[in-house]
Image (tube, rainbow, N blue to C red; front, side):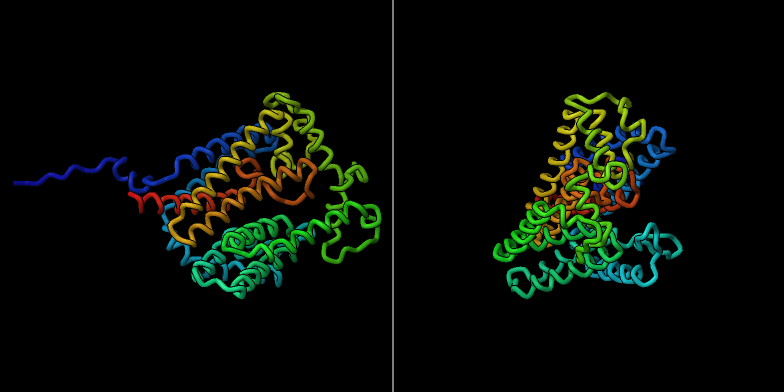
Length: 384
């Protein structure tokens, strides 16, 4: 008597791969991606193939997210040391014989041109989460000193390129891991107070500090100019202050409900610089106004809060620390980009997640989302 086995359907074969996905996180991502496509269609309407390329980048990021989500957190932890070592080695290679464009040495030609600093956005928090996981329950002050050294190495190499935006993102993700690992408040408050005092002094003595010929030593000249331009963009309205002023004009002209889709005059008359990349938030604000901005902020807030909830429910210390760092990455991306476009932060090269054009940044976002989904799946599968 022959035994006949029914061939499983496509859904039956796909279900084990989809099982355990966090639907709320995916919903937030889909809504933000939809807003990104709408914004890119308008701001990139006469910008060649930007809209199609943006959609392609999203699909690539979605594929990376899906693949990484299948990797258990324990396997991700085993990749921490190799990825961090590789990333730092590539940064050293960039410092020695990297490619220079527009005064910055950030790229390396290895058959294809790569920007190694992007890898450290994920590798650094991964490494620090691995470090504290190995010392769970027996963390000593020296362990925090080592963690700060592990963070300072890539941040210092990235700032030397110079790339202040990427250095800021790497530092924020790393500090999130160190903080959530139990960094004592007595070590947190002094640098915060020193930073606040420095900001007060810069604002109070903006005139002398921003005078021509003054050297701040710790910052490159172009970085000093960015800070001074932030304090008073009207000092050079057609030069260094042009970006900030045009962004603020576009945001203000949007009003409550915006001028309407494809109706942004600042955008389509090309007053907004980098309107498909760093300053796309200004273009979005002009066309969708305060109401659209509040909806966008709500989407980012939901994504970040959901990421923190996934982190809090992580099955291991490594998963919890990594999840918190990944949520911090999304917060830093959104806060810094919106802040610099609105004129409350210096202009640095930080894109708005899912909205700004950029293939490398989209791949990084796909990796981060995949890791969050991996942590979420591990918890859900353990419960079932």
